[in-house]
Length: 116
Length: 113
Image (tube, rainbow over all chains, first blue to last red; front, side, top):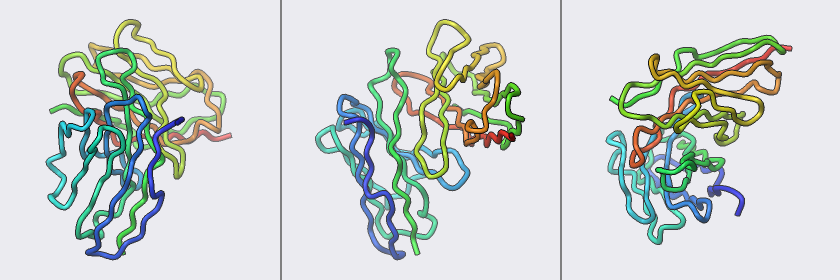
């Protein structure tokens, strides 16, 4: 395990369909983040987990978005009833619990979602 | 509000010249500060961080950054730019051990030969 893994890398879906993305963090990392990035913009925070507990969810996130990390290892991000505005790169990152020196997050390559 | 700003959308530098990419953060406690780089169609790669201690931190690929508490800045620098440094650079901040990481809007660095 050399890094954060995201699947699928690309997803094209029709408007109104549900999609689910998976993230496998670095194995010893107990913190996991989801971000959304549109072209040329900075990553926008969606939610994060400490082990299996979801500690914060962005107020910008509609009820169509849900994330889980049931066993404190991999995580899934589901978008229900997709809209064209959901088209973006969805990034996952993981880190050790902050408080020590190793507080930086490491990112996966992302899942690019296109809603047609 | 907790935030981080990158005032320049684009920075253009000739190869071999020094480069600076600016970052400022809103004042709130003792921040943890980071720089990331993103190449086309790739995820973000960690470059360097400031947690505590020396204000000048060194990172990957010859980059360094200077933490300035009085100016609430964390500018990224490199003494001699390479064409291969051309990419999108993001500054990020975490304000406490419990909080999320917040990213700036990014600066596109373009190094001309």
